[in-house]
Amino acid sequence: MAQFEEVSKKSELHPKPVGMVQQYGTAGFRTHADHLDHVMFRMGLLAALRSRNTKATIGVMVTASHNPEEDNGVKLIDPMGEMLTPVWEVYATRLANAEQDHLLTVLEDIIEKESIDLTQEAHVFVGKDTRSSSARLSEAVLDGVTALRGHSKDYGLVTTPQLHYMVCCCNTQGEYGQASVEGYYHKLLQAFAELTKYVPNRTDDQKCLLVDGANGIGALKLRELVPRLQGELLVSLFCDSTSGKLNHQCGADFVKVQQKSPKGIDMKAGDRCCSFDGDGDRIVYYYSDAEGHFHLLDGDKIATLISTFLKELLTQAGLDLNMAVVQTAYANGSSTRYLQDTMKLIVKCTKTGVKHLHHVAQEFDIGVYFEANGHGTVLFSKVLEEKIRQLCKDSDGERRRVATLLKNSVDLINQTVGDAISDMLLIEAILAIRGMTVQQWDAIYTDLPNRQLKVKVSDRRVIETTDAERKTVSPAGLQEAIDGLVEKHRQGRSFVRPSGTEDVVRVYAEAETQESADALAHEVSLAVY
Ligand code: 16G
Ligand code: ZN
Image (cartoon, rainbow, N blue to C red; front, side, top):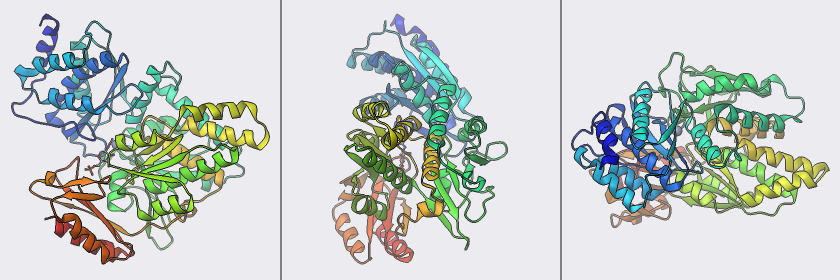
């Protein structure tokens, strides 16, 4: 036990309240910041173990994304910048919930199960968002790493995708880029400049973009980046954290859920606008038309714009490779139909949660994945990246131009995880290259009217789903009831699923008209009770 003396001593400084139970869910641990000190310390311990287990650098991000300022949370990042592997999510939960006098037993159990050699070095990168609690909570993480004799590097204030990028860069020996915020900016700025280099005659109006930074870390980072865009993009930053509260009446989640513009943004009809979330991994676009109607361009519209662009480039380059768009059940039916029937793309549906989409997207040469809420990115296979590199070298004329566009698109995209800054630059580059307005982008297809509701039930776990959450298998009879209700609505579709982040059941419905979608959602929520 001598080797754990430091753990014992330090854990007394981060005591666990007796009986408190938390779970490592789709978004890691997330709750009121007052209940997280012991969890943070223990995630520092776990990261040091995971690093020895993988012989690689591991990331720990302190953030609660779009949750209110009072909350906080923590997520671990695996070696290639991906989400923590499921077996270790279970360890995370066990470690977080061990009572004080059981902590060492649980720790030793993990060490034994994974045959971890404690004499190995451990390396952990730590980052945090702008919440007032984040500074002390990230100190607790660092304490945990040190207690197990791990080396840590504190990146301080970074967006979640920036930390994912650092971890990936470090573990690929710089092949993915330099593991610094400067290296991140350099890579993105260069790719963006190359992509927009030959776009002729854009007016200042076309270059203008209004950005809502959710009063968070995304705003802070954009302030560093924007002056270096060399006038190719003219950003007006709102909700930039100088006065407003994090995520309060602003940010991607607010805009998506409320279907209205954030408070404080000064938008005129036709202005192209976008909103980040509180840790900079989600983005949605929107504009209002001359009649004052609000138009949202969510993750589905973003996936359509990006996949259409990439598919055209592949065809022009003469590269015959498989490409798919990965969605969840929340994807608007119109987007799925457009991608499948008009674009002739493979469309896959997975369970909600970024790791599920990411996993399926990895099976293709190009996997474009987006959740409707605006979290998403594009994955490229190594084979394809190599082909593009070769083509850049070996071809000339039009083919070379297309290959270069593909190469710079690959460089602009943060393949580790959804990234608001990287997604925004890619979208802006595509709109510029195609000479497209936000209205033209919006008109690619028309969303079916839809409605989401939350239902409080005594135990949401009684609802079990299958078919990527599109059907229920229990309680008995529920799916038949939903089918019966859906049949009564033209273009009707509806599903229910237990939330992974809140104690509610979520209901989704879409139909030909808003009245019909509202009615269907209401009827289905009554069937859930
Ligand atoms: C988490 C997921 C997000 C998903 C949401 C669903 C990650 C990083 N985040 O925030 O992708 O959309 O959960 O929440 O995976 P729900 O289960 O409460 O509907
Ligand atoms: Zn987020």
